[in-house]
Amino acid sequence: MTHATAVDDLTLDRAYAVCTAIAKREAKNFYYAFVALPKPRRNAICAIYAFMRQADDLADDEGLPRQERRRQLDAWLAEWHDASHGSYTADPVFLAVRDAVERFAIPVSLFDELVEGTTMDLKQSTGDAPDTYATFDDLYRYCYLVASVVGLVCIHIFGYSNKRAEKLAEETGIAFQLTNILRDVAEDAERNRVYLPLEELTAHHVSLPALLHRAPGTSPTDNERALLAALGQRAENYYQSARSLLPLIDRESRPALWVLVRIYRGLLRRIRRADYDVFSRRISVPTFQKLEILAVGLVWMAWVRLKR
Image 1 (spheres, one colour):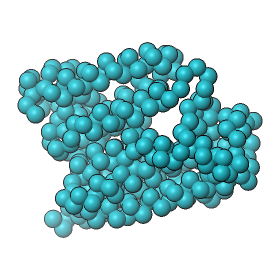
Image 2: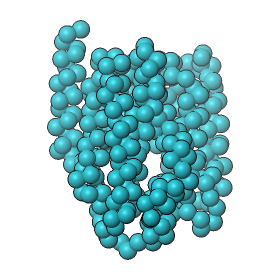
Image 3: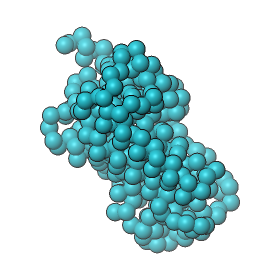
Image 4: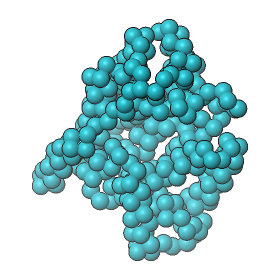
């Protein structure tokens, strides 16, 4: 790709600073892993996160009708397409992402998939009908678009040479997203969304209205716990791919991926220790534990640099 308009280093530095500020403010678990990356890679990851955040914010603006949100997303995506092909843009996120795409040879097609994932909920249903997924295969496709594609973008930034890393990154993204879904069951239900596959609700004798219209703060039934545990086991199985992915990426990127996996897998384990009661409170990894994990990652990163 050749830019139609040259961008000076100062403008790029400012663009990356904007993206870093967005990631630091919004990324929660992700930002702790970003810190354990060398600066050029960290900047690129922050740019990707900021891009996703812009798309998510447009898709989730519940103050607007779905049709208007889709229109705004389409216009935003068209602007990105122009910018990605070298047209002038004043958007600092687009400037930073465009630079990251060139620097790390990220396929531009992945960004269309990222946006497709954010629009799936907008296409799901109309009126008062809840957003649902019929089968696990349907849910997998959603998780692929909103999380696995992020993993595929990230490994280009992390660096890899073995093509096997791509499937492992895909499955690691599935593990992360299933963990998010488990954590957010109650919050999603309040927004008229149930990501747990309907076929699995039926198999575990859990009704859709029971999830959508439960009394606030009530504990899950035995059937609901079994349903959530089944999804939790799927997530745990996919985390095995993260272990296999780690040695396939560049050495200086491994601490960051390790930090991210430890935090997300730690969240899944806390959900399990709570016996899948994700209704009475929102489960999270405490900040002090994230900082402990990050400290190990930073020591590891320093060791890698010393041995170069």
